[in-house]
Image 1 (cartoon, rainbow, N blue to C red):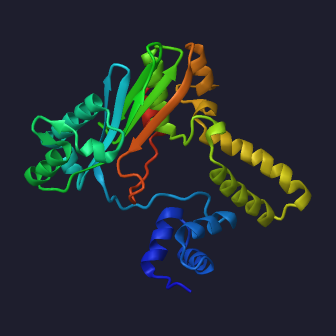
Image 2 (image 1 turned 30 degrees about the horizontal axis):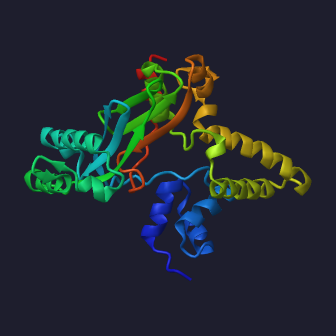
Image 3 (image 1 turned 180 degrees about the horizontal axis):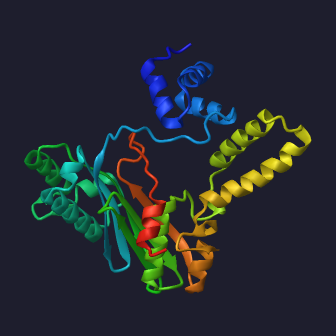
Length: 293
């Protein structure tokens, strides 16, 4: 059996909000596998959902550049928030995103090799590290395309703490596309529609919901019906098109976009440091307020 360390218990407590003894037991039951322990706590009603750890391990900015029918969203990291607000760092981010928008690289290797004057992006970032005094890195980027009659929606929350880029097809209403981008920033959907949900994700949640129902003592003959209803709700919650639109909860996002003559094609949402033990705050109220709700 794996050694259950105090730091492992602490991390599980931070991510789930469960008590110390419950976390220790969950880790013992799952041989120290923290992701399996989170599922164990959820299945037993001890933790309703996994939370991000409180420690912030990465700072920086997300940024967007639109050039005709091409658009780029990227994230560049720094070690501290202080540097992320630095004029030199922000100028570097703007330079890099413009270069990527122009070159349209397909891979990170190609992006780092893009020339800006007589230097590559990789060399510019290394130079920035030396000048600014913190390690800087281009973490990720994505290039999206649209047709002439489509629209890009761009939104940067808190100056780039969250960046969202959407593509609405069939309508060139960029204001509506931006509204959808703001919704994505606030609600954080995982997929465009339920048809996009991976089988792995579906089966994983279905297993958890089944265990929850059984642990509630529900008869096996009604568990199946319960699971069907719960999974339908789950799919609606994680799919952008079925979510209640932040600006008008009486319509779904799909209905809002359809009222503008279009439909959601895709979106990209970057939250600085996500997946790097970065705290996940709830931005819904703040973004909704900015939309005039």
